[in-house]
Image (cartoon, rainbow, N blue to C red):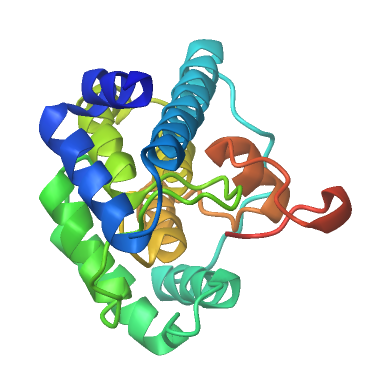
Length: 233
């Protein structure tokens, strides 16, 4: 099966096999032909996403940003960031600003390493404590999001490359784009991406909330809204 072979090369045989099992559990009546088409679609989606990030990194350029916000006290910046993350969340379990402010402040105080997968998994769990347990399977409705299994496998592989850019300009935006674009977690990907971006930029005294258009350009998700209007995912 062509799609399975492509995914095995990109994700590893174990992750590709898990992806097939998840699809069959989600769509128990799907024929082998439908499964094959879904695997090819997932492989094509991931290929486009990888190419997007390679172009972004190769250019060494990032979307223009607005004037950064400066506050007299760092606590003000953390609150502004928490309010932005809360307002931007599309989940009904997005959490309240005070809780997210506490998570940001704790992460900043701990000086956590943002290219460590265990750190990001822990941050995601704090930001999405009520996340559903079932993985997100391959979507056959035309969603721009990959499955959580494929997204996690690719994102984890990319973290070692991202670590090489941790001290360079644009790192926060590049990491944000990877998390949102690959959607590696079952839930809370937007909150996690924005929190990571906030932590990285607050450390540099360079925080500003990203616009919907900036998020779209960084993640490679494109204009996902009706009539070409960008919307958050």
